Length: 303
Image (cartoon, rainbow, N blue to C red; front, top):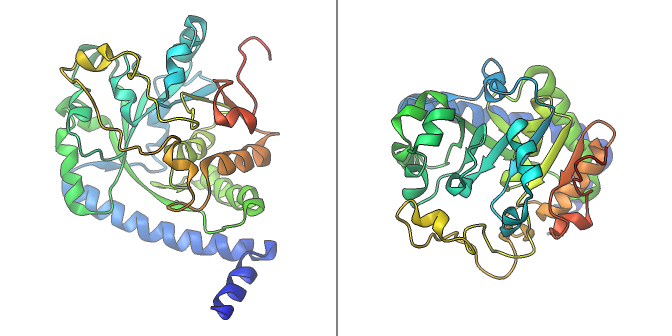
């Protein structure tokens, strides 16, 4: 145990950043191979350098990317802000599928409830035809979940994988991310995104890779586990659904735990924002969000 702790200490030295970077690339290459073979087996395309631009093709002029989470603060977003979100680029996370606002991209992880993907089969989605960014599961059998994806969206669905940062020291987060994203923005992540075990972690990185210089987090509350449909059950009832299990337990969002991820998500976002502050604005929409204690609040017209 003493030797193991010593090796970890050495591994976390700032001078070892290039070693951590090299190992990350090896892991990413392995995940890329798994992604291609499994996606080909089920007939889906993978996110790569050539088609990366397809994600924002509907809004090539957009300068701001909105990452749409599913917290209760979504219900407090003003009409003015909603108009800005619709005019700019947006990517809705997981159960955002139930929200009336159709984003430019849906980011989806496998959910055991098939009703979530089934809810995409509606008029407004057919009209806008958003892209689908599908986190490829680790188990091949979980790919069967994709069978619930409406047929009209299969040609605009992109599978990808993820690799977590290797460091466990918060002060290393920023520099380790910079090495990875410098490479990704030059040559493309080729279907494997840097992650911290949370959707917003890898989506912030992806938005930077796509060239956005302002990223706003909406509905990322963290301080509770209330979702936007809790006070508006009619948003589910229009799909014939009375309730939907979010798999969250406790009183705070599970991404605030570092038991199953390298860092608490608020620590990760704080260090991310601090490292890239001079090049990219990373903002939070709700002043009530736990992240409002870590990063700046988005105030339209205050630029």
